[in-house]
Length: 67
Image (tube, rainbow, N blue to C red; front, side):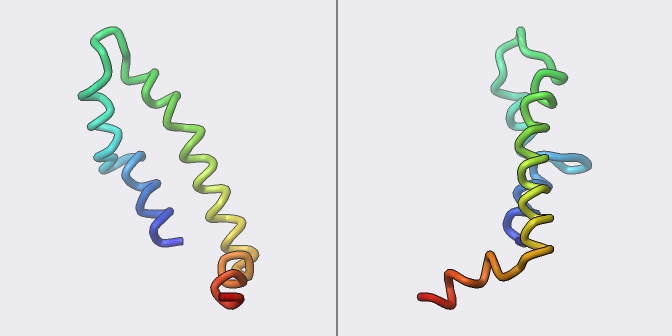
């Protein structure tokens, strides 16, 4: 959960290092708003996943127990 949370923080404010890297490689015709629109679905999916794992932590611990 911590790794997913850290990955999400790289795409969002106030730091958003990955977001700023994306701004650097986008062609001049691309806008910051377009990058934000592209990042939003990934952030929502990651937050949803964190929510599910917070509610049902057995989902994350069952496979290691089986191994």
